Image (cartoon, rainbow, N blue to C red; front, side, top):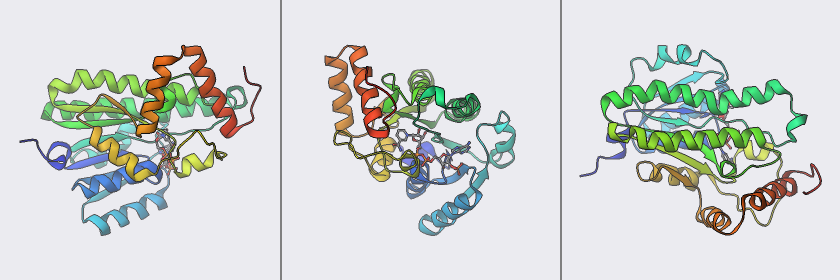
Length: 270
Ligand SMILES: NC(=O)c1ccc[n+]([C@@H]2O[C@H](COP(=O)([O-])OP(=O)(O)OC[C@H]3O[C@@H](n4cnc5c(N)ncnc54)[C@H](OP(=O)(O)O)[C@@H]3O)[C@@H](O)[C@H]2O)c1
């Protein structure tokens, strides 16, 4: 018989970027499935509010870690709290996105984005993945994005970090499978969150903005079944057709042009 979600991925889930948006929903849905949750983000007040609401609604244990994931010493900061806890599920969700022409952004901001979106997930996957492999069970989810599929202008560094997450996840899916550890690269599409709103998108008739609940449910269902998954049937179909019918340079122009229409105008179409 297949083990239950909590038997396979419990007793603790470690979720980054859990103060709002997709991460907060991951924390709630993990708690709903019986997992205790460790919530990580920088905003102490929002972490406290999420933690209290999860305890009240689901009766599980919670811990919060207020930590800037762009720091190099994140493992030193988390071990005093996680050292004695069995983390069976890691959700590398924290991410920074700023839609803007590449050269308009200061380099230090781009480097920080690289560290939060990519380096932190790498360090945590190595740290917790080792312990999971020793126990012979566990799960790791990397939040990627549909922008990982093609070069995406005005989101160049972000898309690069998401491509890193996708390929790291798919590679580990194969490599850690003999150790009983499931890995998933989850490509969220446009999803209504504070992070999405902060980029002030205009409505675009060709983009279907999803809600956090079904998106997270889809990710948790895909874990253990697929190496990677694009959220939403419309997105999956769209990317499937684009891959089958268009040369890469045309797909990049379409994706990049739609960024300009949705968040710009930034520049002339090429
Ligand atoms: N929403 C979308 O349309 C969409 C699409 C594709 C992929 N994604 C991916 O899904 C994930 C979640 O996105 P979202 O839309 O829910 O984002 P969001 O609403 O902006 O939330 C981001 C989370 O990351 C945390 N965070 C940001 N910088 C951090 C740092 N330096 N250290 C620690 N925590 C930090 C934030 O908490 P604090 O501010 O408290 O630190 C917050 O909890 C991201 O990886 C994103 O790239 C989202």
